Length: 259
Image (cartoon, rainbow, N blue to C red; front, side, top):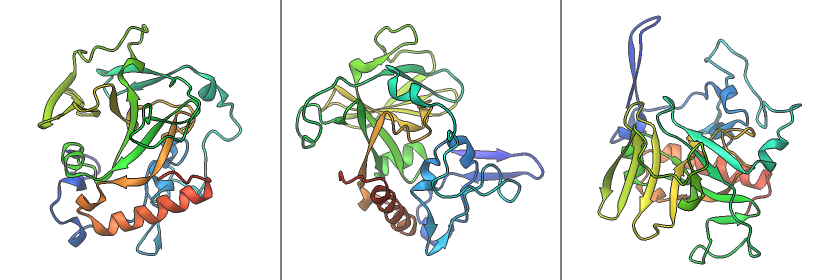
């Protein structure tokens, strides 16, 4: 939950999701290391803060170039492999958690309501994904808004293609509530899975683990729902407002309507 820098001077960075009243003490000034996302990632959704545009630095602030809205690091490169590939690798920072996600099985009706069978597939060959601001996600990850992809458990596999067993050496779990189990890497701390007893056939996978050639939003694998779940729990109201505005504008620019 902390990031400790030793050079050029010592300081500690605290993840804002742990703070009780971030609105009173936090400001948002820019995005950094956007170049690592390939597709702009979260910065395409949080474009400005209280009317002030947020610079999108390719790497470190003030020492790298600013990337334009709509920038995509794969421009001029062939990313068709992302669309056609049958499996997508996911792993944590230290590599202790490492698994594959198989493409969803196709179905005829892509726009079934959320309570219908196979609701996790919203469009051809893509899984449903969304943003969550609930207290439990925030306090377990340290992030004020967390991104999840909804994947049927049979579509998870080991590197060798065997069914994933949730027993790798660094994968740890705990019950965050009576009917919910959360998984994280016990070595590097990465958030990995969210599993609800009431829908055991589907598990939430932390999107930040995905290694999609198209970028951090993995849009050739995921169909993003234009809604923030449990936004009533959000503690940083100013951030939530800015994020919602940017997220909805992104949806309009990209022709997305599903809420």
